Length: 314
Image 1 (cartoon, helix red, strand yellow):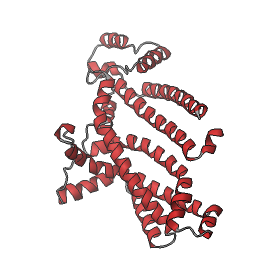
Image 2 (spheres, rainbow, N blue to C red):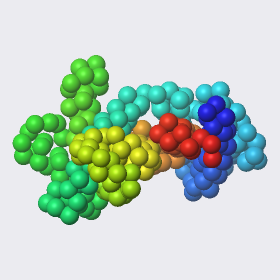
Image 3 (tube, rainbow, N blue to C red):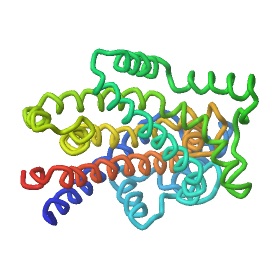
Image 4 (cartoon, helix red, strand yellow):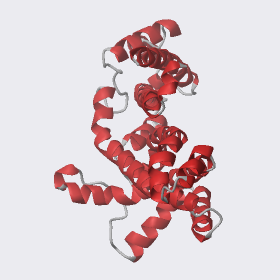
């Protein structure tokens, strides 16, 4: 087991290394000159050149990358051009919004999709199955930003149950803060809910057709016992795989939803940095989100070994 985990951690390090190179190169080829953005288009070429030299932008790309990744390993992601504060501090200041939003969306997704998928599988080709497929198809068809606007129209404008957007902070109380994040979490997790419900249904159906399940039924075990003891755990690997992928997608997908609901999270920070051509912030946010996605995938790989011990010997 230790060797299995060490191999996955080594793969994590290699993946993050290539992700960092990709992020650095992609950001560098984007159009726009940070020096002219800071000083304005009316700045003289000499002044812009001096600023580029001070920022290290005139150095060879391998040298710039080495300095950036060296700082990132020490926790220094550079300094924001737009805000003139450390990028790491900016990211940390937005996590109290983005992390709870992602976790709430994941909680809503898993607590509804997995039971619904099991319900559909155990009622294959009956009304419960058809209803689940219709709901999941609607979840896939409706974009997250459009679902967010519809939720605002219904629950904020028409019913007045929650505010249409904004976030007052955790200092105003846990319940008001969670209430502010509820609609964005539902909109963010709607598409992922649909995919997870379909995946759970398919995985349960596949296991229910196995011979050992038929044998368990022939021995006289009731359906609840067959489902819990012989079906659910064996169907968990594809479900866990999809959940791991979706956690990363939820964090990345918060960029649009945070703009719709005017939430001061990583998404709005990234969009503002892209508009202002704030390269250090864009690099820092993209590297942070990519690192979180890679670490989630490694955690899912390790979880596989606990769900199916045969995997660790492959």
